[in-house]
Image 1 (spheres, one colour):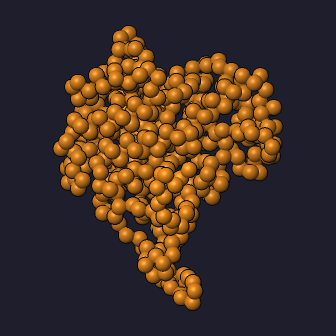
Image 2 (cartoon, helix red, strand yellow):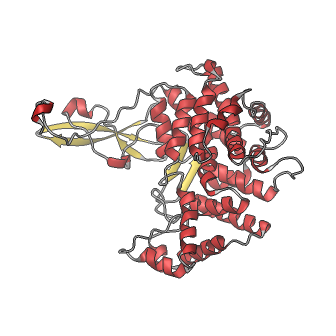
Image 3 (cartoon, rainbow, N blue to C red):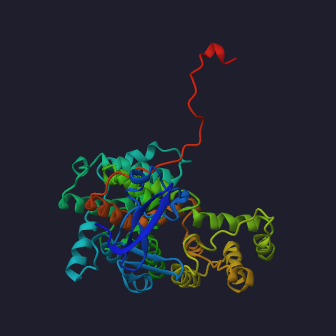
Length: 433
């Protein structure tokens, strides 16, 4: 995939030399300076810590406009997908570029469900982890272990058939890995996957089901489905960029996705919804006075930070939060949960939506705020929250890995500006005091 060049150019002047920088324009009229030859032409590189102004690739998967609060998968608004699509439809859209027709959806769903079960003997690996192991550590490691059962899928230049098999295998087995890890860590019997349930319902049943248990409640399944869809992709975020960077070395998809899980683990990324609950717990321990903590959040001298409000890329309302707020309200009403943490969350939400300080700064509750509340309400332990995020983001990771491989993009290799000592001699140990 190549970028569309425009007739515009930018001029860069340095030490009497002027060069033209081509301008490329995306389908949504985003613009970028093409600087691929900058170092060759000038001996200079650009510096952009955090890559907030740097495009690393051309992609046709997701469009995000933070200023307008827009998120679309392959051109389709997130609001429409969350309301009408299944998580499997959304995965097909992200990975293959189009919504499936009825026959394609049936085939895709069946091919995924046929692969739910883990390879024989793989469950014994879970016993090697200590009880204190974080679920994200287990998931990342077990995805790598999974690759050892599929040597035929480790081709650095996979065929179309191999690529499809890789995608189906990871889509099917990663939720099973997560569910088995959850059950084993709590000394519970493993619940076998069920092909007769949908993708979301099957995962919930593997976690909470068992002999004599009812099928997952439709309201919870609906909220969980929407959560997976809303988290399915988010352009070039930290974990997705990691998947692409690792994949650019032509390592296998198992390794790339495992790396994405590790990147997502961080509290500034996938761990944000866990941080919301931990914040609520700290407020409760501090007496539960939400007004006190709202005031602290507005005080520049305070170390307290209100988690789950605002977003790095959205300068307006996070479009996902409107959808998941509705799902959150439905789940809480359905379950009739009485939880002091959720009461504190509602107080913070109400204050932030009305308080001029938050409104003028557009510090609205984001998707992490509501997803954390939903997961707590349905009984997911806090340290499992980021695993759910990973399950949601999986189709996006696979879509970006596939796009990267098909594009033939060269290996990623960022530059740096060295700020260490200049050349100096080696001093023998006897001369170092």
